[in-house]
Length: 482
Image (cartoon, rainbow, N blue to C red):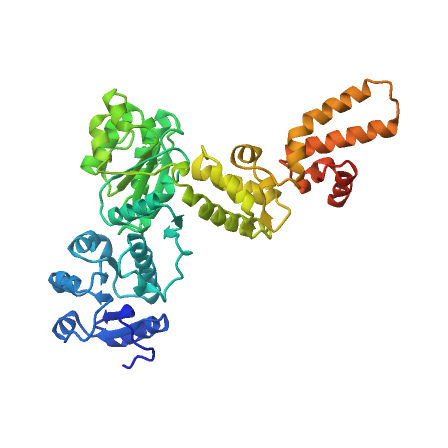
């Protein structure tokens, strides 16, 4: 079948499909996506055919008797996507053999295109020379910014972490994510799940420090009816709910010692015993844990089981705090701005240079979570099309930069208390003019409102129960708009 699009060595895709009718339909959809497609009736025919040009992508429906051909196919193309009748059973074995991804057979157009999109994201993160092959599928992130399953970064340290995440995702091993609170450990755990062969299974996340020990044990391992006073029916735990998928245990360092023993057995034996039950239940769960504690030192101090620590830390990934990767602050701020503006229906499209400077100089003790909340707050308060420094919390302005001289905040934030003291002194004097006293009181209230709203005039007007125009008039009248 002729290809209506020009062939390019960067986008050559070979499709092996025994059902040629269905194969032609898939080939047409791939051509519409921009690929040059060569359709083959079988893997044997492909292996026997002459090598006319390099293969950038190889997609094949695999019969059980063709298992031995996987390594040969991988030698033809590193990006090998296979379709098998039982992907959940065969995925890990085939990926170890050389497959890049494993899908259900027969192939379906939507699933195949999604797999190619995921491959594009993974290879762009790894810096693979083949990343350009997937150009027709999705637009990549902005220049200089790496993206991994919705997580973005510009810093070298995070690009390296993305590379590690992508490499470890395809293996079933346990992962321990280390880092301060708010750095995005759960987001990376979800990325690992989405890039793994288990992505069609559930992703379950719990915080081990958020519940008392008695409830936590039931939540993790489940219980049977009558196990305790309020156990009126059988209840599955998160291990059962995550069967076939991924379980993320946040703040694993807070797990009580008694539960650490049960968790270790569940990881080693792949079996759990619900509260009150007699028989164990087999579970197939990949565990990702996270903590802000140093578990190695906790184990040395006998506050955390050393054997469990060694079982959890097969792969340790350190998520650095935001202050150590300042290159990521502005890309993340712009991403959060876009999301918040869409969700809140606000016409805000950018960040001023003075606000950017303030953000870059702030240390963000709450890390990415603090930045996201800060940007959402600024979007709510902003009355312009760009976030300005006056829309940011005063702690950021005070630490990270200076307000423009023309901004109300430059004067009001520093002088609110002085204005109030001046008013109190005037009221205590012999001046009984209502007009003068009213003016001093108004000026004091306006200064305090601007202080409370970090210089945001629209928010101050709402507090003062004035129209925005009336507030601007009074700012000029009292000389507060300099």
